Each structure stands twice: as structure tokens, then as C-alpha cells.
Image (cartoon, rainbow, N blue to C red):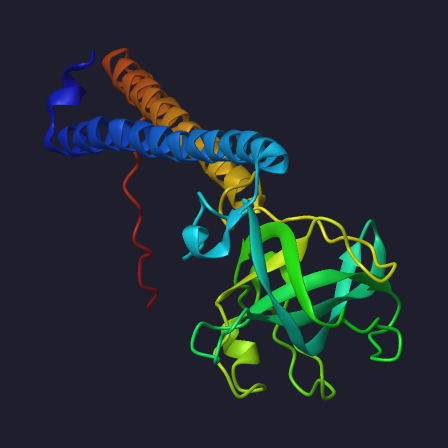
Length: 268
């Protein structure tokens, strides 16, 4: 009854099934491994963040350039505050507000070392220079979490165009270097303790190291590939059963032969 499986048509179907099933399983396993990697990255970052909060601050120069390992570590730098900028549309604890960013020029620097953007704190409401407290005068030593430079679209921020003077959309050297006559570090520090009555800004995790939407997309793709594999098996068994039933019916004479169509006779 199942000799039809050896026909050329069924050879093609069988080869397709034998190739499709391991391919779907491989792709599902690969997507699952990517999700597991993201879970492990998230766990590692969480543990590292907890350790960074208790760690002793290190000199800024020893932590540059910023990467996934150094991001979030506590850094210290000494210098004098210079230009100040506001970063609008930044939410904190569900409230809208803005960051106050002041450039710290390293002690004795002539500009070649690069000024460090320091997020001194967060204030609620619309960004306004009148609300932002002036930076401390003289030499200061800052201590806070080191962060990688932002880019448009990262962490939900955008480099909005048409901002008023004294405001920037993202915290990065690219957005600040054209506003000051000296170099700017492509990193920033958020103070452990905000000054001027502002609220401290918590450190953010590096991009791609959390359980974000992409991580759960990998988990969803895992399920889809395994469903595809099951669907291929289901359809193969269904086709085999239908073919076997057709062969059995033919052997038992249950399939009626098609009657020849009658050609209409011409009328004279």
C-alpha cells in the first residue's frame, strides 16, 4: 500500500521533509541560544551594576575608552566647570524633565585632553536655563558612574533638531564639540550626589545587554521555528494518509471511473 512513497513525486516530498525538519530545529535552537545569551548578559550587567555601586572610584583616564566592562563603573575626575547645557525631554520616575550637563575641563588642561560632560542632576518640567543651578566655582572633584556617549535613537533619546541655544538632544562628543572651542570626551559621568538641589540621574545599562524587545523577539522566533518543524511533520503524515486511502480505495474498486463526456449531436 505504501509503495507510492518510492515514486519520483514522493521522493521529492520526502527529501524536502528530511531537509526542512533539521533546518527548522537548527534555526529554533540558534534563536534560543541568542535569547539565553541575552539573559546571561542581563544577569552579568545586573551583578556588575551592584558591584560598581559599592566599588571605589577609579581615575577617569584608567576607564577610557568606555565599553561594556567599564560602563557604569564609578569614576573620578578633577577640574573646573565651564559651559553648561540642558538636555530636554528626559523622564525620571515617570515624570518629565531635563538633565543639566556641565563640561568639566581637566585640571591644568589646555583643551587637548578633552572636557568631560558631567550630568549634575535632573529637574522636572520644561528645560529652562533659569531653573538650572549654576555650577560650583573653582576646582572641583566629581565622582559618578561613567557612561558611554549616547547616539540618536539609543535609550529612547533622539538628537532633536531646532533646539534652543544651550540645549542638546543627546550627550556625546558629536553633539557638543561644535558648541565649544575645545575637545570633548566621547563619554560622560552622572554624579552620585547631584548638587544644587537637583535629583541624581541613575546610571544606564549598555545597549544590547538587557532583556529588551529584541531578546523576547528571539524567544518568539524560537517558538515559530519549532512550530514550523511540527507543521512539516503534520503535513507529511496527512499527505501520506490521504495517498494511502486513495490507493486502498482504488484496490477495492471504490473509485468510480469517470464516464466519457458525450459530444452533442449536430441538428440538421
